[in-house]
Image (tube, rainbow, N blue to C red; front, side):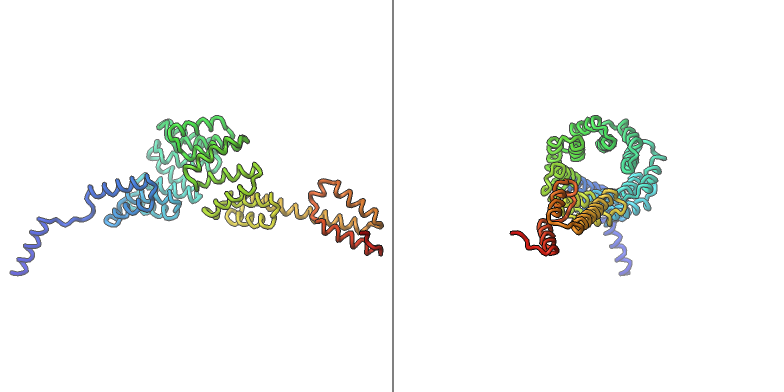
Length: 377
């Protein structure tokens, strides 16, 4: 009787106070609203916490998983993002957001063929899917198929004329083929829509840099730096600008700042090496070229930089051997000084010659001794 009574009481309690399994729609909406607000404020870790509140109760919530994957992409955590989208796709293989998320993850991991396959799967089912069209355009831009990338960006703009990612992609593709006027007009249009768009500001800076309009380039890059002081593209632009203006110390400091943020940035490694070459620090430059090649073994700029230094070393050695050979064949002090005078007259040889004044004085001293004559003071 007692057991029956207890069961009746428990049944009554559960009727009055129903057990809640999972989140209510109101709770999920609240967490998603919090996520959106925090994400827009660039508080990425806090925004993920709001999504995790959903996933703790509902681990298979595809919406939360896809949003979390996109935050991880924004943070540059590409492998973790890929794993998150893979889980979402396993739960719902028909989710376009998951498929595009996989494509975007592959793109950022330089797995371009895998990325294109994902976007193609989406476009087979939805030919006007903007995210898949943008993703395809970005991949084609990355692999330098500029005309095809412009085609995809234009398809997006036909659907949404003010789509910022498509406008930016189109402008960058045109910049890559030196269509400066058209590219600049698109960057200007972007800035009319979004005054502080850092991609457009950096794009303008690069155009003016390519056109050797250094002051306009500086204005654009500094405006971008005000938006985001640690933006890698901005810092690279300013570093290159200072390098071209022969401001080697400023350029070097900027490259060092970039490498403190991203130690494997090949452009910064090669830029640092180039500055060191200008400063005559060839051994240090070789180390940076080698670091760049560890990251990208086929990087032509790094390979050419190393070859240039090695060739200069060979030329210096050959010139020094030539000088020593000539000096060794001299039979008089007068002819010795004639040779030195000719060397100093020869600007090309002088530029290559590694002998210091102390080395020359030492040679004079040895020459005097070998002839058995006292050195004139």
